[in-house]
Length: 114
Image (cartoon, rainbow, N blue to C red; front, side, top):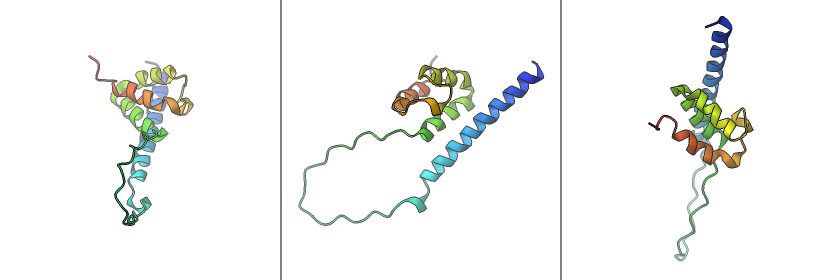
């Protein structure tokens, strides 16, 4: 393998590591208790019918990045790139947010197919 190819591989690994670190930092920031507001008690009212279930939570870029970084770290870098291209992007930032759920679903099966 040429030195240039090895250097390019190192650069790609470093980018993957940076994405993984960013995803971990985002996950930690979401779990930071200082950012959580204390819940306020609800006033006493007459019982009401059960509310409708909340709409599905929007999937964030950081959540998708965390999953894809983990898959890339597990040796599926090529498959992750293929998934990004499937959704019309070279980088995760180029994927339309409306496709995040489908992208996550596709990424979850990486490594599970036999």
